[in-house]
Amino acid sequence: MVRSPIPAPLDTEGAIRAYKSVLSGIIEQRPSGTRQRLADALGKHRSFVTQITSPSYSTPIPARHLPAIFTVCHFNAQEREAFLDQYRIAHPGKPSPGSAARRTRSVVLTVPDLGDAKRNGALDRAIADFIHRISSIAIEG
Image (cartoon, one colour):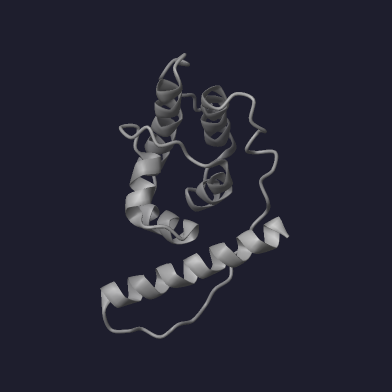
């Protein structure tokens, strides 16, 4: 069973660093490109992913992003539980992020190759952002 090597801290920033350390360790074990795939899935820039995955930043991870993180990073049950243990310590009194997680599914799209990595990336992020916004409306409504 995967457990965080960091003891449960008492301060909020330390608690946030603890769950980010778990996440960071998991991402480091994944193939290269995982951070970019996560940025695309969240409809955010890669710098946002750096802020929410790096223990050196005290930016908390919004609970609404957890299902995408678990999916894109392919958390196994033990990794998910280790992460959620630390997440609950950092955010006491909030509903369990795992309890409200919605199931997701993948849709494959075929789009034109724009012949430039920068333009292709921009198109991919625009599509991911559009899907994220539409999904948010559907979930809220």
